[in-house]
Length: 584
Image (cartoon, rainbow, N blue to C red; front, side, top):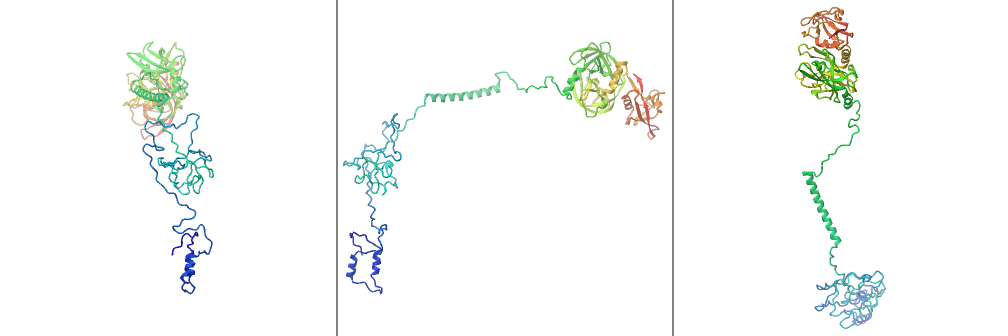
């Protein structure tokens, strides 16, 4: 049955079932009479323990500490024409300035922490009572409503029409002069008093400012500079491609200390040429309707010049030889002496000062592979310098003898690959120290079976021949001192048509007596028909080579010969003899 209402005592719902249970006897007998039960029901029921003030009440019964929430009413729309707070003003209405005049402090919406907000006049309702909103008053904006979980309102959203405070003062501080809610006490139920603040209009939108004169000038200057740069680049590219405004000046390396005739190492080609060129001359010989061009070099300061015999053999008359020095000075020369067998001649000039003799070296000390420099006037191009190496030594060559009455030249030559051409004849072949080691005389021409004087050949093919300077020096001394040179001889006549190995004495093809009486060969016991196969340990191929080997020595030198007697199967023996001398 239902509990009686209005007793003034809270009911203890958990005690009723316990009492009903206690009304039964232990034996299960029926409860006492109905009157006793009714009287017991009117009496208050006491719990077996103390009442818990924090216990949860039964469903539907309010607790003693929570008052009923206020009634929420909808906001009233203001009449037409009444402006809403925070709304955009009509077109043309001036906006309040967001920035106060100089010296006036701007109104702060939210005061600093710990400082109470300034008081505002209370809202007037329809009846004139403070704190009550009027029916015609504008509804609070969405921004003025308190958040759902705002701790300033213990029961959630404040009553309808109550504005939301703009700032929260420190705890326990009351804001005077404000309207209050619920009876004017200045406090919400269960909380401290709060001040209400009217909405403050936001700053008016500032219209865009027109660019200043300085800004416009800066932008114009930048645009002008950009246009000028592009135009200048285009003009420069066009001028570079299609023409030049000024003269062209090409870059050049800096000055070399060794340039312009500066010193060069003595062993360099430039150093050798610089020292040797003043002592090299160009010769032009005329006579008999012919003219020859060659080269020579200065032997001493008296004006003696050494050259090839085939260069000056055509010269006839006192002024038949014209000598041109490297500096351009010219002089007339005369032939002092010549020897066609050695293909050497000496020309003398007079009245010339400042002659630069070239130093003479030792041709016997030259080795194959040594660098050499050839200087001459090939094709009348004076002062030409070519380089190469010694490609062979003691190369037996014969040159000349093509003209009727001319004598064959026999030379035990130095072979070089330095280019020698027509006009190089008589010029010096110099070693790496700038000393003369040979006299350029002949070259091997293409299609030619023998060496030819370079004045009668077609040009160099890399096989040039020079008279060793040791032999040239002896012959030049004899030509200067005696006007003629001596030839070493063994006193035999050779068979030049013999085709066997070696040089045969006498026989077919020989001219005159086979063995000269009282000559070196006769004293050594040589006889006609003997074949000489070796000279000083070197094999002899034919008669021409034997002549070359003998003429490479001086008269009075001693030779060791190997002689075979009795034909191809005959016995060989060694013979020693001393070379004799013959003039012309």
